[in-house]
Length: 84
Image 1 (cartoon, one colour):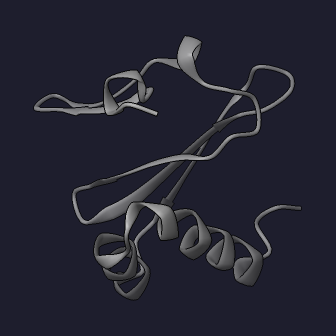
Image 2 (cartoon, helix red, strand yellow):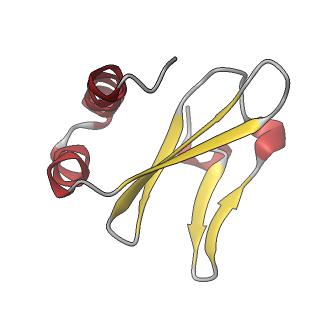
């Protein structure tokens, strides 16, 4: 996927979400103000947002290759039991 099509944009005013471009149950993320911001749209078209402030996770996401970022986030979600 090209970054132009990515529905999460960081602009000087803040984070801009293009929810019409989001797929249901797909995790989207960005790093903003030293936090990892997670977004996903559920099957009811509701937008869910999570903020991760733990420095070790933020640093791990920053250092990961783009292919590995989802694995880092999935591991965190499982550890924190956020998917229930």
